[in-house]
Amino acid sequence: METDRRVAIITGASQGIGAGLVAGYRGRGWAVVASGLTIKPSGEPDLLTVDGDVADPATADRIVDAALGRFGRIDTLVNNVGVSISKPFTEYTTADYALATGVNLAGFFWMTQQAIAEMARRYGGHVVNIFATWPRSRTPTRTQCWPR
Image 1 (spheres, rainbow, N blue to C red):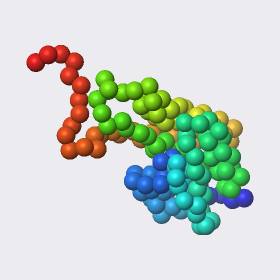
Image 2 (image 1 turned 180 degrees about the vertical axis):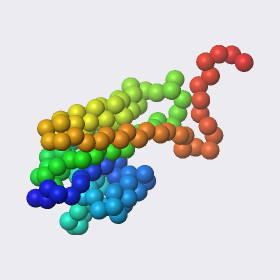
Image 3 (image 1 turned 180 degrees about the horizontal axis):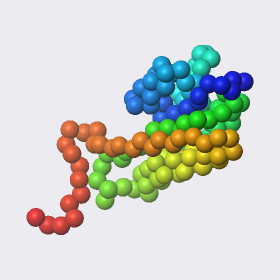
Image 4 (image 1 turned 90 degrees about the horizontal axis):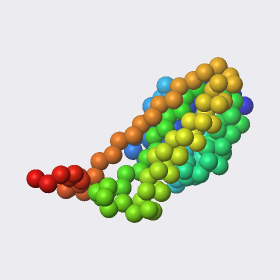
């Protein structure tokens, strides 16, 4: 188990911003625990991947336990995972609501709770939260609350 190298946990790391963050942290000499719903295994010594749905508190436990088991510490958590429902808010179903709050709220909560508990036991650390949404269609969706 390594204990002298800084360690970052990055959620939503299988693509996009998350994959870029993994490359950036590793390029600066950090060990990285990368998580994603469908992330592929890595054979590299400074990169540990953990698949799973962050809306499930057991996933946060597995990610933090894996980080500590492999690297012995956590210095930074980057909460990058998120979902965007590409339709007007007024058309959300209960399934849409459960998905959005499960990943965007519960996932953030469980990951942050576990990581901060470990950081506080040791020496401190950093938490970075990234959240951005935009419609995936060419036509913007918005809800008008008053008549024109």
